[in-house]
Amino acid sequence: MTAPIARLNPPTLPDAGAMGYSQISVVEPGSRMAYVSGQVAWRPGGEAPPADLLEQTRIAARNARAALDALGATPQDVVIARCFVTDLTPERLHAMFPAVLELFDGAKPCLTGVGVAALAAPDLQVELELTVRLPG
Image (tube, rainbow, N blue to C red; front, side, top):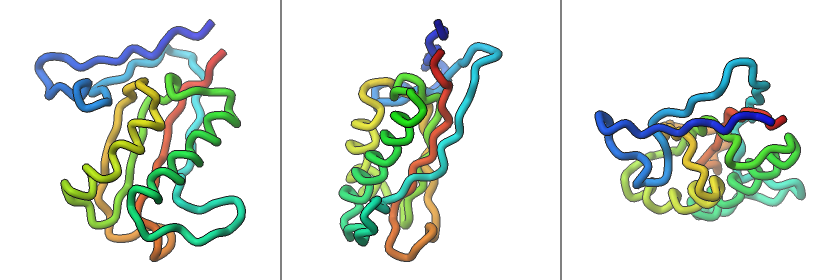
């Protein structure tokens, strides 16, 4: 049985746990790891991404969940997530954050938000990248 990922929010750092993520994740040595490429609002049927940031985030989160499922992993196995957002502002972060937290299902992995000028296509606004400790 794989040891759980230890999640830490030491009192000497801002309380990220209250916002839904952790400052530190500790994985036992020898764990098998997977690295999930950035998931965006592209769908298997090829439909164009919606213009709305929250809807794009929901689709990217569904794609990330599908990647976890393919690995036999759950949100509890996510060590760190990176969220790349075009034109990042506090308002845009606030608009998309609920969909990101929903992906984690209460797991509170480490989370890094990065504002970027552009993503892989001009209509994309958000991309989620995961580092996952494989169960087993």
